[in-house]
Amino acid sequence: MNFNLIVFVTLFIVVANEAKVLNEKSNTCQDLLGDELIEEIWAYENVKDKILNYVMGGDFKGKTYDELAKFVDTFGARPSGTSELEKSIDYMIDLTRKEGLNDIVTEELEVPHWERGVETLTMFEPRKKKMEILGLGKSVKTPPNGLTAEVVVISNFTHLEDTSDEEIKGKIVLYVPIFTTYSDTVIYRSQGAAKASAKGAVASLVRSIAPFSINSPHAGSQTYNDGVEPIPAAAITLEDADMITRLYNRGEKVKVNLIMDSTLETTVSRNTLIDLKGHKDPEKLVIVSGHIDSWDVGQGAMDDGGGMFVSWAVPVILRRLNLTPKRTIRTIFWTAEELGLYGAQAYKKAHESESHNINYIMESDEGTFAPLGLVANGNSKTRCIVAEVLKLFQSINASTLVESDSPGSDISVFTGNGIPGASLYNDNAKYFWFHHTEGDTMNVETPENLDLGTALWTAVAYIIADLSIDMPR
Ligand SMILES: *[C@@H]1O[C@H](CO)[C@@H](O)[C@H](O)[C@H]1NC(C)=O
Ligand SMILES: *[C@@H]1O[C@H](CO)[C@@H](O)[C@H](O)[C@H]1NC(C)=O
Image (tube, rainbow, N blue to C red; front, side, top):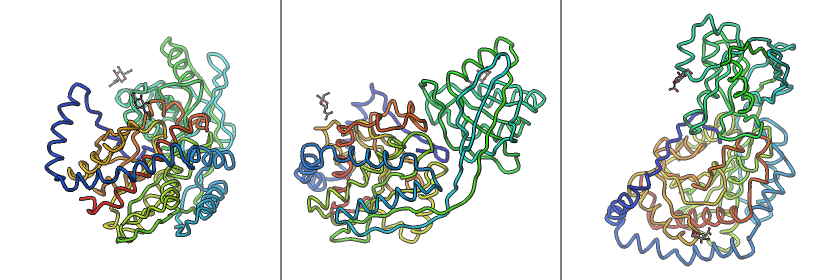
């Protein structure tokens, strides 16, 4: 997931207030939904059991994991603009056709193709040390022999403001924000170079946006500001950032050489749309989605292979079980999410005139660890419907509704505009350990958690797509 363009507001209810809030909420929900709708939702219990049994104990058991492993082992990383990404899209289309689902279209769009090329960072004062780095998305390159400069350690943007331009000019700024939450600290990755450049820095480094590290730098997107000279930008490890900070604070002069050889061009990729047509209102859509592109490190198994595969599984399972809902289920594999939600924005633009037909939009892009429920937006009645549907999943501990006005990464393009939707809420406390690193591999995933996620995702999508009423806006 890329949080460059969105503010991730998740309201974790304080435990002490939880019971009270939930009670008040269920009273209001009872009034808003009425007995009839509540009964209607509970009548889906059998279908829900059928789906859960099929995925967790039947023919689909372990399949999400196996297919995801085959996919990421075959293609590896799938950065925007590469032939690996395009081949992986073709592969997913074939895999889907083999399931007898033939209602598949792709929609082309322009995407950036940024290649990092050779990257090195060498400290040579006060002593020599080679450091692991990952250039940040769309970063410009350095001159061939690199940039050699002193490092200025900056704790936060106030600190940067308080430092004179004289002290920054010609130096390499190293931001060392200590990870609290991703949404609070990612700004140093996404905006660090732009702000350092404005004060005359020649390059910008950032302590990786992560709570834990075994010397692994974390990639990620960043943007330059208009009117500011673009300067090279890279992430370094927590270990090296903290060591440089200690040296710097002891008054040592830290000098480094940074070499980056990146290139940026524009090319074409595709969003992939797979439809399981509804039997009553086929023009109305319940969208389930994840992105197919990844960073160029690791395998993109967690970000976002898992999310894409649980979404792929939805129409596959429903077709196998002969369950056709009233509305159309549309699976979307977004392309070029990592460099800035390109696929989602292109889809929104191309389908603007029919956006009223999006009944509900779902995305899994924050890990596929043990599912706990959904993070959902929408008006009160919509949130109550989701809360009631989630009660059906108490047996797998996935009944929690987290309320947020703009859930998701790609789908924030829609949910931020009032279209109701949800992202998968899961036990992802370790998500940012692996995020955008070489460590994002199949070893992060487990068959059991993927089965649980697939089961929840499929059953929720089916129920919402089949309810007698549209999700209120
Ligand atoms: C910003 O950094 C300065 C210098 O290290 C520090 O004194 C200040 O407390 C920091 N501010 C915040 C809000 O962390
Ligand atoms: C749900 O939670 C209960 C109680 O903690 C536990 O015994 C059970 O194994 C959990 N079920 C799943 C599917 O994780």
